[in-house]
Image 1 (tube, rainbow, N blue to C red):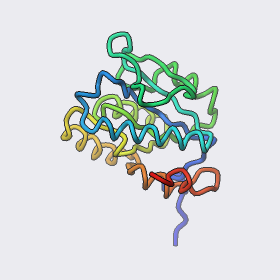
Image 2: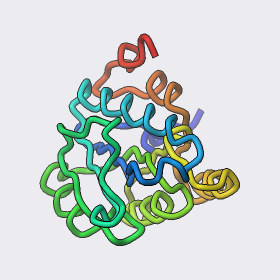
Image 3: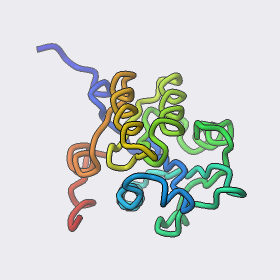
Image 4: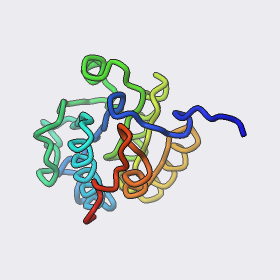
Length: 186
């Protein structure tokens, strides 16, 4: 049997991983399908980030006009909360912070809104830098379920790993520990 490159299989190393929370702003709540589910996934990922000591980076799309991250998500421990006016959250400010915080960055876990715009552009920009991208299907959404569904297909076509939160937390390991303790009671 041929040996596989473990990273091609989606393996993650906590010290080389970042969690990216994209534009989950209160003003979008009435417009985004399954907004509440996206918020629940974000909170669970923040809990996992604390447990595994993985930094969380939070973008806010034009907060002066669109408001800030919903208060339903506790981002007080985020490594960086930053404003953006581009679709991609992989901005020069984020790139600089990631280089400082995680010099050997090799993978990210991406969740937020909107699937077919900001999430997709961020994923593309990360892949261009040879960073492995994991997306949580239940942690991303759009105004239209069709936009979300097509975006999920594109993510797989371009080389992203697409999982559901519970699968991700029970099947991936960080620093040699199974993640099951993070999702107990979920």
